[in-house]
Length: 125
Image 1 (spheres, rainbow, N blue to C red):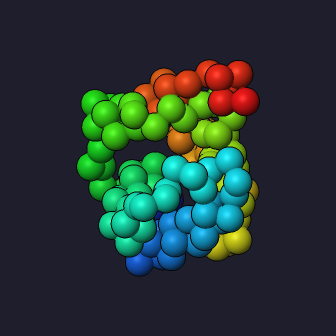
Image 2: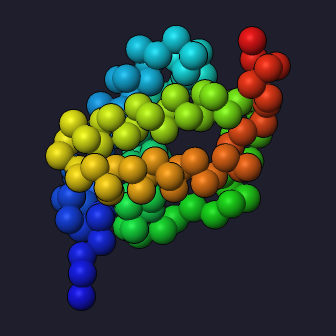
């Protein structure tokens, strides 16, 4: 049986490193950094490690209602979600994830747009 992306790239320990590096980029990104003011980053990184693991066919621990609920109050627009997806894609590549696999993770996160995006791009300008 073929290994999942989660297994091929080292499981939770490596994915946690990826997510930590991803958030370094997010916090340096002007359109995204504002969402993380006064956020307990260690807790968020632990939480997002599980989410990224899920995106990589690891143990699933998220449902649509949870994802919608935690993002509803943030007013994230589509362009911001795409910036975040691009930063994750770049980070995955930096950690040796194959191009096709990194693109698949990006595609999967954008597949959650209806649950994450709660503002139009124009409204954010």
